[in-house]
Image (cartoon, one colour):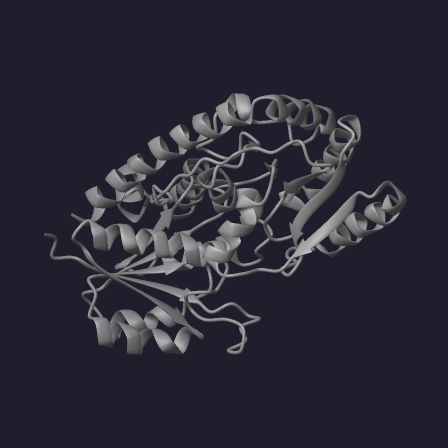
Length: 351
């Protein structure tokens, strides 16, 4: 047993509505990521809790209540100056700001590197990062700006990858129907690369003589994603007489989302930037074949397509259509291998 006590703290989603959302049904990748990690630690004999805060002012109360040894703040939302107070109130607590984005995505969050530079000035505050390249980028920035040696860097900034629960299914693939459902889920933002995947899907469906149902989550538009959604709607509007449809699926609690994933024939996640891609893992876990990009660290490279080439995505769709089972099994194997390593890394930190 470990003497460490962990407390994960997330910020409540900005569109929270008590009538439609609960903490357990927040339907965000960030919440799912933290919840997976929290449950893995509990199952491994480490005391751990998770709390969803309204804002910075909730943190002191929850830390006082749970008395953790480590507080993990998920993502960049606590203003650095808040730690002037928190570190004085809880001097024995180790605070970890855990980042979930590669540098191209962080570049769109206006204060990211300014805040990171301020965070590490607090003695008991550390940075955890779930992607090796982002880890190197942040360490490079801090090594030069702070003049730290490698020992200091590795103490203050370290790798904390994503975990995913090991529950996998297989499914029967019915390609005899006259429609094909392709899921390209995730918040609509430029780096998710929806448009080129939609074009490849239209070409693919047309070539096999089926009506396309291209599924997206349109409830969250982020980082100037409005033009992307407008272009998707505009393009499919011109395909109405061809019976190809854009399907806007609502965000939903995790179990309901997994049911939606299971209804897909193929998943697409050919993104420009990823650190883990929980949506892709959800599709694979319920037995749906997936084409991603090499940005997804656990995916088999042969199942990835060039995100800048609709032709490459189209050809991969043709391949997956002929042998979906091999894609599913090979990606489930790779995902299991990745998350087993994650578990070891986290237990080495906290046990």
